[in-house]
Image 1 (cartoon, rainbow, N blue to C red):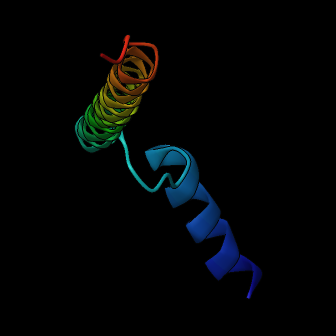
Image 2 (cartoon, one colour; image 1 turned 180 degrees about the horizontal axis):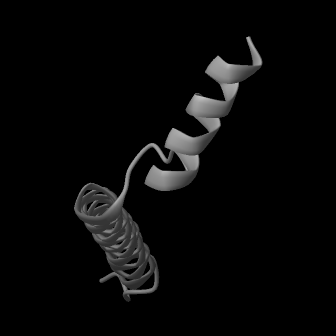
Amino acid sequence: MTGRWARIRLWVDATGPALAYREGMGKLLLILLAAFAVFMLVSVVISALHFLFWIALVVVVVLGALRLTSALRHSPRR
């Protein structure tokens, strides 16, 4: 048994540590992961701006309605 394990040990030492993703494939995966993270970040920013736009639109409509009703209330009646 020790002879077999010694041969396996020599083979592992000669080829280096057993890594899941080496060199080109690892870089490609990291680039894809970074691109996905950037896409998610941009999507979150666009979504937040879209939400703020609708909130601002509702505020403008409510303020406009309040101004119109207050102007009608304070107008002199003849």
